[in-house]
Length: 153
Image (cartoon, rainbow, N blue to C red; front, side, top):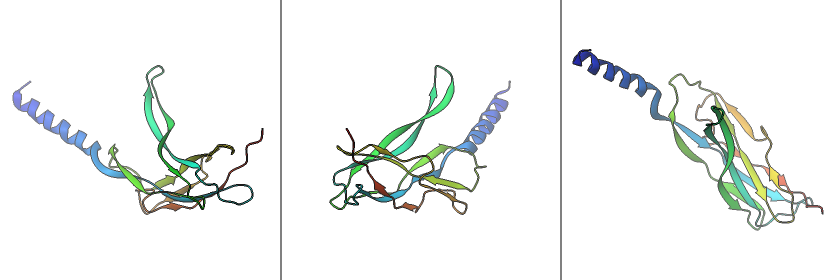
């Protein structure tokens, strides 16, 4: 192969890869301002609340793409039982320019407190679809009020 052909193919390959791998799409995690109360509607103080995000990986044994829940942030409830996760973002390097302009925003979290049953959100419990903004969770606020059950022996 001629040297000019190799250079042309290298430039063409670089341009094609550049279309698909570039830092343009920003992924947002939603704002969550919640309150944790017990069954008597009294605030639960110092409960630990964890934000849950998906971690994607390749299972080498079976060769499939999988995901698992990952605790990425934690906060404690205040004297009124309130907690807050601020909106955060990350850049998605691998995406196509053909991504649909539909955004799916969801929030998942877990709550732990001694003397109370463990709480984990259910799939689809806090979700929102957005057509006008493909950044999904940008400027989205969820305001859950979570009731923890007292642990029975």
